[in-house]
Image (cartoon, rainbow, N blue to C red):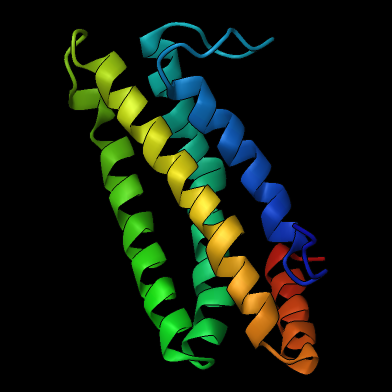
Length: 152
């Protein structure tokens, strides 16, 4: 899937999200310099939420989702759904400290699967449709907005 240059910075951020998603799932192999116990994985994903996911969600919601809402009803509905998944992911991650030791591996697996599915939906469906439907000048506007949000 070739990404339009306006979406490349967001797609690059997705890579870290996919790694985190895999790390949280049952049967994940140990990754060098990454947490291995449920408690350290919980702490890692809580930090990842604050440092990476929340700024990433904000970037998407203030750029791509707004643009999609003005494009077509289908893209608008997809953006609404994806934004609701952002809130759901945030809630699930923030609830992890309340999980018992026995529940934590299951809850981490749920978050990991949910995060992976969400990113794959954005990449494989939403971004593909957006690239096809938006005219080049709108994609260029999007690129400017993304770069401004990222401070580049």
